Image 1 (spheres, rainbow, N blue to C red):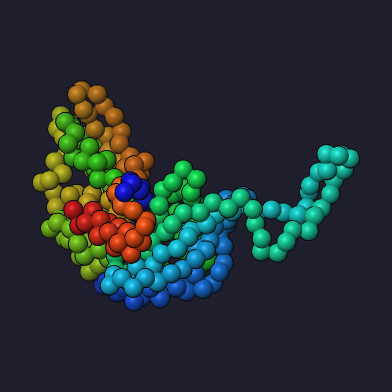
Image 2 (image 1 turned 180 degrees about the horizontal axis):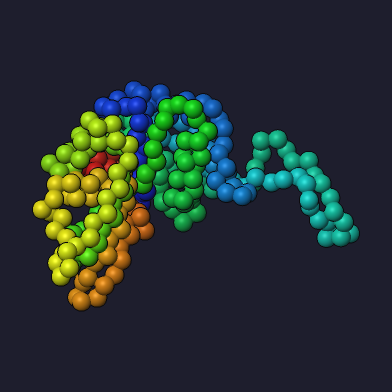
Length: 276
């Protein structure tokens, strides 16, 4: 066995108020069937290259997520004669392929991508889904990446919390502690898509997050559906914590030799982390 590392991307469909794996499976299959790449930079593009439906009871989908370079046939230079040239580029063929295994879990609407030294970056995956969101008329969905709980614990465990800004968007999680469920339900009931809370401590005091169901619940929600920025004091030193700078990396020891065991274990460990 060896250790594998993964990023977790959360893709909640806005129109889906309750868990609906079939809706997510249909959505993801339709994205693959388009066979359309998304531009993720000036010369880079990305696509879901392969799609495989497992026999798992969890309905796991897996394959390769790929990025590549888009080349323009115009504006070339020939250094042999120092002349300008144009070239005909083969249609639908692109160089500099980079790719990573992905695993999509319809039950929990998470796209999990393997992190490797020569694979795709989290930035590339996020750029793909953000561009896909613009390109698709429906369904309307959001894109988040799971943030490290350590960054949130660092805020909660600070000697003094001077100020706190929390931003969260639509959620269809339905899991979490009482405060989490309170805010999650309130957003759904009030048909609120986004919440931004700015809190500042009274002079000479610290914000007591655990005494506020709204602050506690919204901060918990931000782990999967937003982000938080806090000014804190630790050991008399003031510092700023931006949770968006700390993506969560899931570490799992396993072997690819038994692939079914591998992806089922990955689903379980992903869900266990989200349920904490």
